[in-house]
Image 1 (cartoon, rainbow, N blue to C red):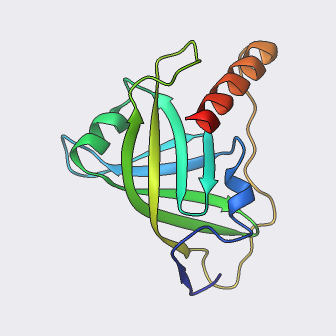
Image 2: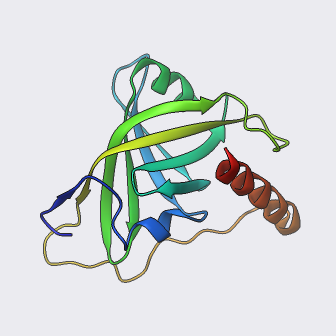
Length: 151
């Protein structure tokens, strides 16, 4: 995808965003008007034009989106780094079927750019581990991902 601008998730990118995955999102801070970057993992792309994700509904991200809908998601995978930009909206202030108070956000994709620097390829994708009870984490992850897919 180098030097190309896409308007939807490609066949390589869509499957990457149909499961829990480390991504970053950038919104415009509602108070300072400067970029605000957060790492999240509960993401799911229901189709090639949208990416949904769950976050704590008290998160600054929610207020940022209420004031400015512009958002960029960064995805590292498929050998490169991708910038997915569009308009974010709050689909639900409280995601049903989850014990935590999570908001459901939907990013409507306007454009996708391969932003990897010239002459390089990602050889190892980011990975992470949960630092709390593994069984509780797996149960919560399943509840959240199921709720996102149903919404």
